[in-house]
Length: 199
Ligand SMILES: [Zn+2]
Ligand SMILES: [Zn+2]
Image 1 (tube, rainbow, N blue to C red):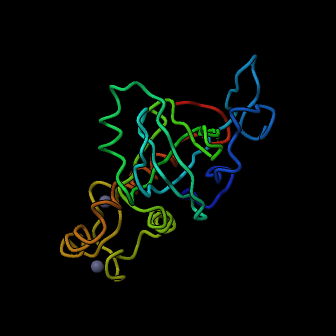
Image 2 (image 1 turned 120 degrees about the horizontal axis):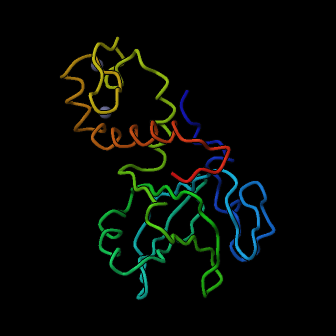
């Protein structure tokens, strides 16, 4: 079984994320402990990067979620990590932000803050493509390049192909980036999502 990226509990849209400013809401994800909130399960915000936006203080990106709604993601991390973030976050790529919370910026628009780099994964494919890849993961007998009976598996991710030729042709076309996505989805599949466990 593979993960359903359309499962709105595991992969919520931004409006359903716990609000950092009012901790009483959305007890599906957090409980209040003293003056902070603590996750009670795992969830992950998936967004596609549209562009880097002007911000003199920190890397900030215009992004869109699975339903096409746009907002921004900002990195509240040490400046020493800025270069790594800017290299990773390319337009058209997908950000996966574990335990994401929502907040508003100075101009009152929605801003998703990332406060720890370990909460972030950047996958080198568009969000729609990631959803398609996830749907296809249970299918293991048919070549994902041509649809014939598969006799070979990608040595990195196990995706089915007829032979080396199909794998090589598809590698240039799509699998170079999809292979990374499949491996990340396989890793997510092994995680516990319904209780809190920060790996
Ligand atoms: Zn084939
Ligand atoms: Zn692969």
